Image (cartoon, rainbow, N blue to C red; front, side):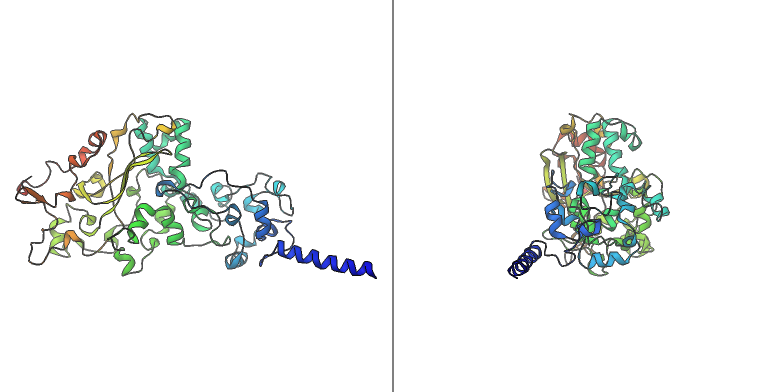
Length: 445
């Protein structure tokens, strides 16, 4: 009888300890399967390997750190929703490979295990999403052709198609830094981008339409999201957000983002790139200001606020030597061959001749092939900005034309002159986009 009593007390204590040790609202039971383990939070914490490297942040700074077990936890309403979807009804091994029905972590992750199946989209995703894979696999969004073009040509090669001819160290540096925001299908539709810490976004639930803040802004933060949300002191959110409630997909459709299967070396050459005219018809004749300036000025010159700039970056080194700042510069349009207007807004970018010195390239041989100040289209549009809202009683051009007042030239700071350059190499690469000698003579410069 006493033996039975002791056995009963032992079982009570054992069960109590077990419940305390593996308390988990989703699944505290058998962990000998993919789902059994990944829905057991306490088990994941015990089994997780520590991070061996800092999260990638790209140009937006240091990445957010998320614990490795949090990145792979299947729980909450998101996981319940996922189980009801087509993806959730598939075996985990159908996408991830590996071995199911085992509690041995090493064995489970053997068998050619794939952490991110959509990085092998032509093998895994294509069976159900043939059209999307065909189009996206060569898109700027996934392949980063624009960045590869500049790195490759500044090094002295012909273009992005020769990226694989760059020194191995440079390719490695590109992939570890520049490529952190160019992700696979999963990094938009099921996982957080690496720049946001990575890991499952919502219990493995697939989102047909990516979340604007958690996905789009996570990568496009320093320029797109920063401006659109009105983050900078003194700036206002974009009118398309405040007045119309637009998110990124309101203008940037899936056709543009997925691509059409063709290679475009410049994002502004993508046929489905949104244009102001898509919504604002008959711009040139809508008012007298447009009639005067539509041929010569990009829309952003009048309707943008100051925007983020930075420059002279050491990739994976000391970072930007010209710290991030809010600026506004009108220059000669460096993309006039397909963006039309003579003048446009330009933005100081991060590249310098020695940007890749940490990866063995002390100087880019053909750096001047592109200007440091690039064409830009800030996402901080207002109908009335400082430059198109003259003070009461003043002429319409009072805040935008350069006007000589004694020895001072009013509004000169709005335009890009050679005197604005900090380094000599900026002059040699960007002289062609400055306005020196290219403004109306009656402005008195």
